Image 1 (spheres, rainbow, N blue to C red):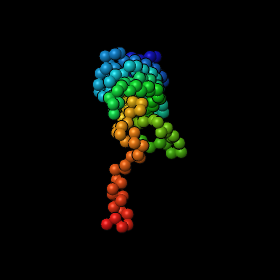
Image 2: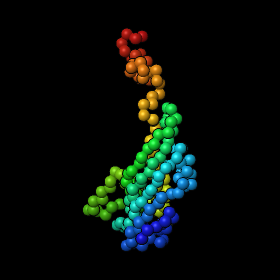
Image 3: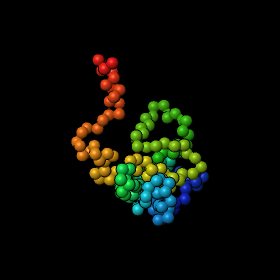
Image 4: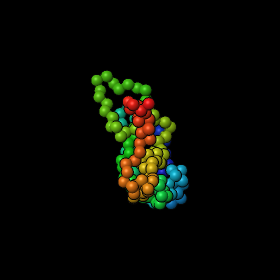
Length: 173
């Protein structure tokens, strides 16, 4: 079964059904998300995956996020294009406070985020969150440096605490 961009309501989830989804926001939705994320543009965005039941009333969302985002360079403001292609996993726990049964071994991947299972599971929110986390915090255009004079001189950058370190040396009273 393939779903649209609407959230999955917990009350509608069948315990034996795997739900597949594919979100590919249109240009207007990508522009709105780009504005929220502080990006210049989102040229391409696809989030496709499945939601499947797992033990104890829990649900697992696995998906692939594929995007091409344009951000301004933090140094030159030139456009920097970032291609994103990564897997996303969320585990929605029906009872997040429950202890695993004695003798059972529950192994969690480091890439899996767990959340309490609420009234609905919204793949669009997961997509937006995963995209925000995947974007570089400080995108730089090729060859962009903060201080062009420093890069041209070949001198090593001065550490911000170098003066304090010099004060700690014996004889620098």
